[in-house]
Length: 178
Image 1 (tube, rainbow, N blue to C red):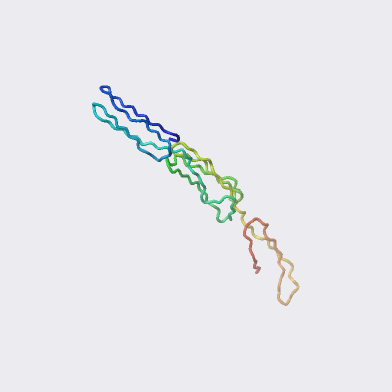
Image 2: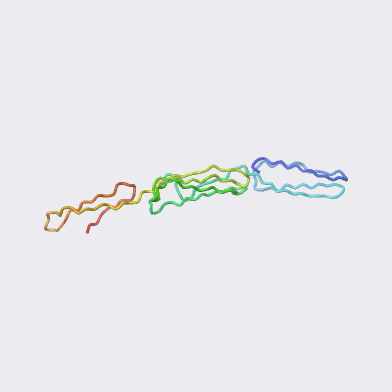
């Protein structure tokens, strides 16, 4: 149950009067509590038990494996997953994950969403999301031969190169031309 519970007992004995049990109310959350009633009459005694749980708290949903507003290199993108838990009645329906926003090459601004989860008592969580960026893949610089330098003593030649555009990827700190 996901609200207060009232248990009322009725004892019926057609031959004699019988004693009934008092009503029991469950107003606090619990995974389960046993409620018992024993009725007595001239014909004997009968006992009945019932286990009742009460859970008014929505399940929790979180995202593991990705950090909101983070930036990841394309070689090691995150692998986010949905994690749902419920301390009392347990998860009935897990959240459905969705990933949107990435380009076909797996780069760009992504949003990972975990849909709502429901517990066995009927409580439903809110969806949760994280957004992150997968950096563009690094591009290879363009090299073109230059005019050989007029320095016959060491045989050096000038080489012109164009570095890749600033795409947020890690930049080389040096180049070797052979």
